[in-house]
Image (cartoon, rainbow, N blue to C red; front, side):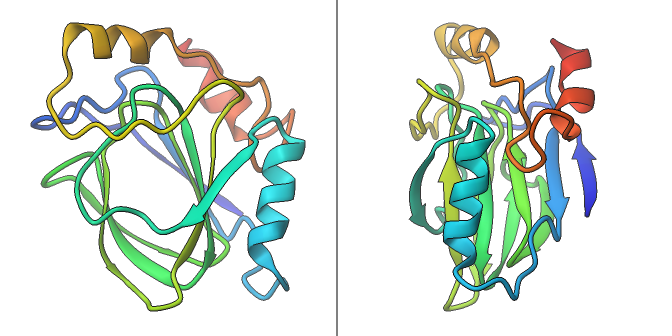
Length: 168
């Protein structure tokens, strides 16, 4: 598994997260796993990130101010833009996982017909859908969010412990 780290600057109406980078776990799960969605949900839950939905990714730029989000690509593939309009384009496929700190803009531009995503958040957090520029209150809410000490994919000793802990 390769973990790509993306540091995103504020872009247009999207604040991104100035403290925490996006983590992209390429091939975190074998795409040939039977019922990959359930396997991802179980792993996320075991590591303190209870799954909350199965669906796709919206085709408009948005971010969340009330939760850090883990997205497990359970089937298919898609083209995403991370960071807001004009942001970084990224192809994802079954088995990949994205960890988006609160404030991170994301949007789907293309997807295969079988594209399926599992979404999870730390306990007590949720995915509000924000499309407008952040107010001072939204920036404050993003800055105050906590996260579990465990990585959603690898648990206690996963990439989050090294790549996010230095920024808190």
